[in-house]
Image (spheres, rainbow, N blue to C red):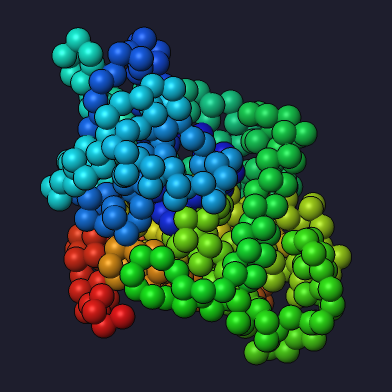
Length: 474
């Protein structure tokens, strides 16, 4: 079994999709590195990118073409200035020239050199092939697969052995929920404490804290940006941003100028049940509106489901615990990452493989379990909350209208966040020894459901709302 770190499950990147945007971007980076390692980079005369299956069917709506171009330019999705993306793409489209790895000028016309192939490659639904013609006339190519959550692999899986070796070094190697509980019981550890010990086998405490703080800061900044940006989302559906107006109705009159001051100001607002629902929805919507506009988000575990975890964590910080601090954030993210890894190992976090249950369902389970531990739940109750959250997302399809991560994707994050909070409360009020459905069974069931699900409902925009609602209706 391969090791999966919390930093594998929670990655900083650019929207709108982890599998269709971040993954192809990272694949392009990997291909550049491969070319460079063989001294071929400066010899490249022409490049073609072939997109297959789901990447082809919904690639335009998910900015897959943008992602591969940005990756070929050598830019990094974690640090690229968001406001430069459009100008970089427009320059390539206008001049038909691409600066490969930011150094080598090649002829590149996106309409000719990015080829959309509707056929599916047998290895995975999200395939893409990079092909280069060298100045000598020789052609070389490499195929990658974007398997969800920003993870990229090739068929030969050369990095798999390294991941397996890393997993063997974990003091607590966990593949299933039952193993996680056994370790917690035997060592008398919370889940967050166990996960932290595993992370310490990969990096020191300073690095762990730095990276977790960077993830939380990105989430907070994303919510702040979404709540303070009005207008219409790009893509042609003419979807109006809603977080801005919701936030204006909910916020207090206290002044603020930073995301941290904003968080403190929300703590001073009076909230009743309806306002809690509205705040949580506002947080979730804000993230996914930023995601839909090629903004910077944290995959959690994917971009399409990026709003659930920050919304639930923000709920804890501004509603449940006004004294909440980084230690609580750290605890939450460690638990969420571990639950997500169990779903990835036992099923999938790719909508192209499992429908939206693999994205919103998994993110809701991650958030439910993490919130449960923060609210004092036992490891058994944490896994019970995760199971409850997923149980009520089973069979959820992925059917984005126009191939855009907007309808119904943005609202689904709001629903997933609310369900996560509800699942946590149900688990906290229950005896987990009386639970009828263990987490591992719901993971297995989710995977069986994914395999039975028609490809029409797996991020292809060939079924469901994607064909029931026309762009002309919007």
